[in-house]
Length: 455
Image (cartoon, rainbow, N blue to C red):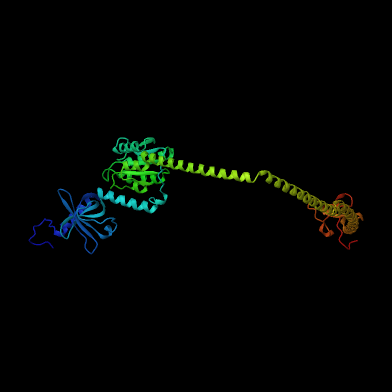
């Protein structure tokens, strides 16, 4: 019932109605929004819900993220953290506060990159891409060095300078790539695969100068890590400065703190090699002189023994021993031949006893006996069959209707239906019938029917 003090025709809103309809308008006017800002006034009571403000240089807005949503966060929000949220606009009716309800939150800027780095590092580590057991050793003296880097950066100049100073005789092959930007990771991975498939170098240096995390991000991409892991040529990673670590450093066969250090790692120092070579030559010369001296001593000792033990005496003993062995061999051959002849005679006798001629004659005689028995049995069987056939013919002839017809009887049948008549009463005068005789048949007309007993 309308209050008497209320003027008629006015729609008076209550506070709750106003806020409820305002919230409906706000929630119906804005879809889910992505909002970027800095966290402040962060609190998390025992309920597990999160309450905070998002601000920029000019304004701030109150936010709420309920427990069922913030349990999915992979980081711990803190005051001052720069985040990116997906939220819906609403109104908290109890206080009449404008606020946003956050459905999703992620770190923005450098924090997101660092978290992506840590997640990829952990995942690739579980897959075994960082295992030291699979890493290839860098050759001591490579025949050719491949450098995968930007052709215009400071890294390639530092590498070439060090290689020229340490060992200029080793040729260098440069594989130019982009080391920064959206296309850099794919280009680096493709170049590593191409260089490895061409097998032109014994070792690769993957290099880039220093920079921020964003600048070095191409070397933190998964596609680059998997290309390095699949590379069958030793690869040294030299990305950034000493404090910079990338995913490529963990996967590579070796990591160098700087591009210059990578050049020193893959090449020997020519001056040090020359010194080592001189020492090795001196050692070799001393060893050769020692071997020659020992050989001279051994030769002198053998000459003395040769004079003391002339080879003619040894040859005579060997000749006598050879004659003895020849006689023993002849006797043994004679014995073996006699045994063979005796055994051959025994086998020949056994063969004669088991000669197939006798068996063939026996089998031939047996075959003839079997043929005679078969012939006699066949004749007896045929005689029995003929007798049985004659008996059956006589029996059949005695019961055959043809024999009855031959004795003068006839078979009377209906001319059309071939019905056999056995009683004269079945016919009438004037009927036409067929009479089958022993030879041929007659077509007759009945003139008179006489029943049995009629004169």
